[in-house]
Image (cartoon, rainbow, N blue to C red; front, side, top):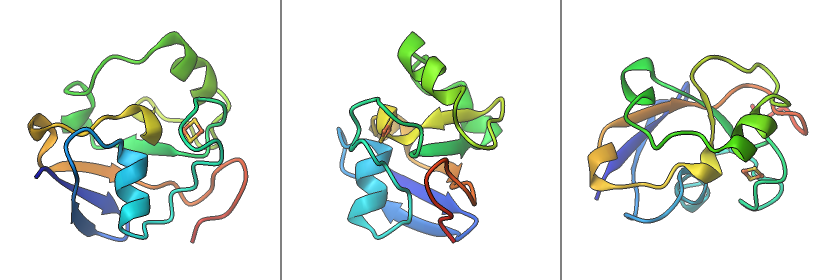
Length: 107
Ligand code: FES
């Protein structure tokens, strides 16, 4: 099972291969919102991927890119958690959950 670390909480969890990062977060009580439940209609699952991992992810779709433009605190390493599918190749992934999303303050 690939492991993923959520920052700044520094919580390392095991993910099921095939689950999204959003599903992984929810399975372990990580406060990543996901208002549209992964249907690519919000930006509340915004995460910032550690630089060493960003280029190892599947490329962004145009829809994801459009939604990310609405994310609070967008960075060059931003992605939507519901669009990252966990694989064994992502074992060790590190992502930061931003303090704010468009909908809520998460911490
Ligand atoms: Fe809405 Fe990811 S949960 S876009």
